[in-house]
Length: 333
Image (cartoon, rainbow, N blue to C red; front, side):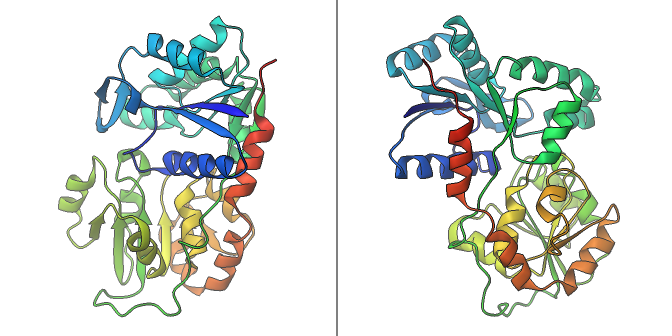
């Protein structure tokens, strides 16, 4: 198949959506599919308000029409609800073409937390955006139920995977002058990640934050005893996971939390809140602790077997994720 994937989230952004799309395209191309990525890199862009490192395509409608008309793909998938997603949606509806979408971020909850706009208003806007889609792909059953409660229809599962070769346990924890245990967060350092819920905790040892974002400078000033090491990639990222004793995930708004899967693959248990994403991944597997008391969850994780964490991660693969994606697509004609 010739598949067009339209996304406002793309490199140089570093997040779960971008990593998912990178792995998806790699898996699909391995089995012979031709992938056209339509991203902000092909357009004139402006910085997103409050997230200057995120670039938004400026008036992309004409260029979207040209790109998709020339490409003549067999299927179109719209990843995001931004300017490119809106333009691709208009193109599909104008030409009476079926298309699929996916739901990656609980923007309504973030917008309510940051700006006080009731989440039900934003959910209604998103419901209208996704309503014409032949299939709306979601990562977990909990998110599917939440969206169904908000009136979304045509919901289907699209799970995630993990690179088990890159993210793996170390034979032994490396020597470090950082006091143990090491409690780690990996991800964007942004308001919607609810990081103070982790950084305020009274925990022994060391708190480690791996990642960058608009809140990093303010949080470094506020929490001088926390180790902030910035954005990491490749083996450096894998080693920060593997040297950790507990992975703490304070977010309430992620739809999956790919970083949790990377931590489990590294043999590191998860302490998180009992919200969608962690609920689906941890379940009753014994590889993490979900508790509204995040300190209690983090301390309880110190008794969890790293081998059980790795075994849970082995249940997820990018090949399976790609096959689910394919099964949800709608081909033209």
